[in-house]
Amino acid sequence: MDRILVIGACGQLGSELTNELGKIFGNDHIIASDISKPNSAIQGFKFEQLDVMNADRLAEIVDQHQITQIYHLAAILSAKGEENPQWAWNLNMTGLLNVLELAKEKNLDKIYWPSSIAVFGPSTPIDNTPQHTVMDPNTVYGISKLAGERWCEYYFEKYGVDVRSIRYPGLIGYKSLPGGGTTDYAVDIYHKALSEEPFECFLSEETYLPMMYMQDAIKATIDLMQAPAKKVKIRSSYNVSAISFSPREIVASIQGHIPSFTATYKPDFRQAIADSWPNSIDDSEAKSDWDWNPAFDLDKMTNDILTHLPEILGDFQKA
Ligand code: NAD
Image (cartoon, rainbow, N blue to C red; front, side):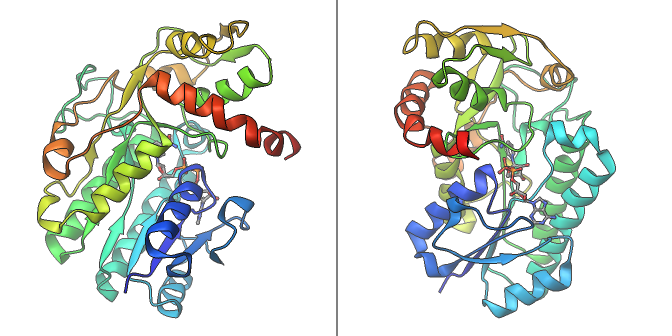
């Protein structure tokens, strides 16, 4: 019987993934955990407060709840990481190594750990970036994700730990606020549009980045985790791709629904990070190994967000 621990369950991805795992396995088979106190998005789940840096507490929770799988999502993201590189490196590396070591010692069934397009750098081919290519990340976040990918493959090859990973592009969801990444503008922009406020974008209008709607990210994660082990041929991390757009294009997509919406552009330090990342990603290996296929393009995503975000916008404004 699967019993799943989600680490970082209060975050942008964690809160949605925890709910989806609950639908598949039953809420009583999921333990949500985070360094923060539980929030309303993960109501209905058992919760354990956990700093993933504390390996003893992690082992205690795994034993107490007879955990068989861990989704380890806690990390410091790209923009926040540049503000405190040592902190980001320590959390992103020690957290992952604590989880991998525990999986080895306790023979856990499966581990999920997300990587990012931040593993690519200025020398990486920028269009349709291949799965296997030059990787020279120049942010502490990207360096930690690339090192993490190598550790995942190492634990799989040396110890047989069934660890699986996806290099997410920028994730766009409307149910929670993002945690400090370079693609966060593409979430904030919908909040501003619905609040009838002008939007000031921290990237230039022609900055193309690979992005993905949260529903597709959840689907990719579940599809990969449910694939038979023999189909998971890449044990570092899979390229996945969905949408690639610029700030100008997302503004135009929103203007299709809200013609009065306007945006201005004032690039800050995040522009240099965005410039070091690909425009678009080649995900043919994910497609052929475990049948990855995204469902949302830009306009379908805009339509879905502008339909559903108004139902919960008041909760964000109160918070
Ligand atoms: P987030 O910042 O929204 O959530 C991270 C969660 O981890 C937070 O709830 C935070 O409280 C928790 N956390 C932080 N330190 C912790 C610690 N020491 N112990 C336990 N919990 C701790 O981030 P997210 O956007 O949900 O990202 C989740 C994962 O997906 C990360 O590994 C991130 O690198 C990866 N990812 C995200 C994106 C994106 O666009 N959001 C893109 C690529 C990869």
